[in-house]
Amino acid sequence: MMKYVIGGNWKMKRGIQDSIDVAKEMVNELEKYDNIEIFIAPSYTSLRDLAKIFEGTNIKLAAQNMHEKDKGSYTGEISPVWLKDCGCEYVILGHSERRRVYNESSERINEKVLKALEIGLKPVLCVGESAEERNNGQAEEINGTQLEVSLKEVSSEQIQNFVIAYEPVWAINSRALNPVGEIRAATRKEAEEMHNFIRNWLVNQYGDEIGNSIPLQYGGSVDKDNCKKFFTVDNINGGLVGTASIKATDFEPIVGTASELMK
Ligand code: PGA
Image (cartoon, rainbow, N blue to C red; front, side, top):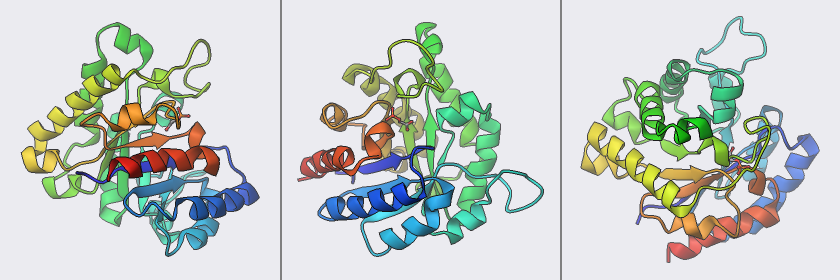
């Protein structure tokens, strides 16, 4: 059975001292789960502090984004080289908040993906359709195109460093993405269908063995009560968790559920 990968995306929700406090709690709460791959993506300003706290533990450090160049005149951007120097092992790329709020195209995400690989950061590549796209029957087309363009020129060897996260935009507990109306997690069936689609896409592209070995995370309103429903789907190998990752008491039972299912 593939090892579950559970990621916490803290977005712009935890300050410097906050992050230190929560990270220490996470270390204590999560150390017993040595059969799970865990990463946390704090703000850039907390990376150095958290690298020290996570050193020698089972929690890996992730960045929430990066620039596609090593360095240069890019005001307000962050170099992937320095993320690596800060101790990041993973980098989230193509999150819907980047794609939809900051207009990052899949072409741009592809440049970032290739740069991350060059530098030795593992991409957590996010894809997902909006409610409107789903209602128009375009969900597969949108996710397929995001995969195809974002993964252009990624070799069979390189793809083995990835985690792919399916996060339907409408399920993400984000008022930046969903300013009005109800936000709900996907149903088991909705998640399963799209994960099967993504798995088939990867198998078609990279063959059986490699395509089946890449962890697929579901993301979008995952919490301690619904995570088992997702983690027991064949092609769901973990979760990318936003809201329920910023408190250790909410995140621990999610990792615990995955750990139990590994036994
Ligand atoms: P959420 O966020 O768990 O708060 O819905 C998930 C994400 O944006 O990665």
